[in-house]
Image (cartoon, rainbow, N blue to C red; front, side, top):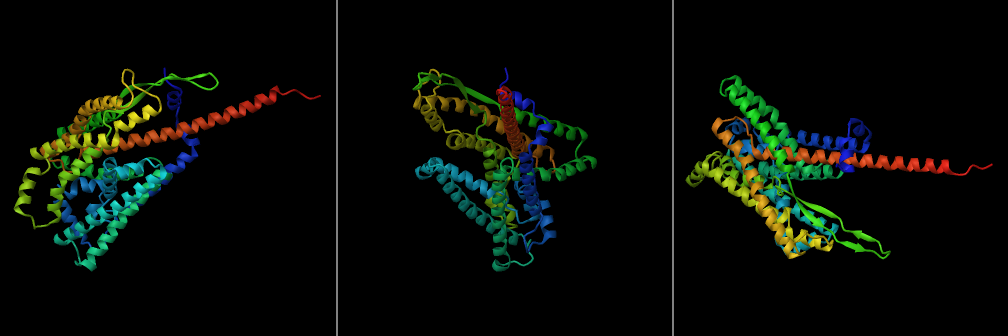
Length: 454
């Protein structure tokens, strides 16, 4: 039998959405800031030769034209002020989270509540500035080496370029925080989501133009479209898959001799607790040699040429290491950040909850470790399959745009999370309206039952 919350969720309609004024304001606020982000992806960095840059990007589809251009919403292909995108902030936050799981001082900060969270956010911003500065300086040097700059030099181009790109990344970080606090959904994820979606129309137009020119057959085009639909349905199914661990709470006697507790609940464990972090890390590491060679111009060493020959996109060794890194990061990130079994076991012990047949504390942590390890066999295999299939497709069929499993995972996951938050706001609005109605009914009944004065 469906719960009350599920019944209310089933009754959500456009009429309910029309009455939720606060939700509408949040959505409009988020859309406005996302439009600001898209405008910034078309403002170029000063000193760039736009004609030479366009020719350079068209020839560098393997590195700069791939996942980097996708994550930046096309900004790196136009060398805009948001060319670095939000990736330095994501990399910094992930590094800080991993360090917090291994460094006792940072782990203690996480347990100090709001003050500790603010301190960790401050460290994350410092890390973002450092990573963005390092990447911006390397990007400016690479642009000069590739002769894409009208007036090269440290003071004339490199320093203004670094300041502009770092400022753009910090502004994007602020936009994401504002969307999260005053808008709807996770701001950082929505910025990446919009960047990916914005590049799809041009990529699809290029894809279909290849079909009209005869480069791709109609059967291949239809097969790719069917495969995309099947993969999206598969991702939705796997992201919603849960393993429910039964949790029992004992009965407790209060001071008034009443018995409380004694209920049972479930601890939901996702089949893929790490989300899209493993594919992002694996893609970034494997694309690093290609990106370095892309920005180094003609100054590529024989060793780098050998590395590119074996680790280029679509090569067997590249695919093998891609899968190995996805599996490694899935286990590592889940154990240290996403699902820390020792912390969950301690929380259950404090709340007097236990898994039937398992002793609280260390035994519960070991049991949860056993469950999560077995689940991640399927979870990492699912991530590898989704990320590997588009790579093989691009290599075999020479599809002219970057169709990656990482982008597909991000789009589907962010869409599901945003819809869930919208439903939560609508449910909260329904609860508030029901409470107001019950108060009005209670007042009217009390008035009707009051004695009539003569």
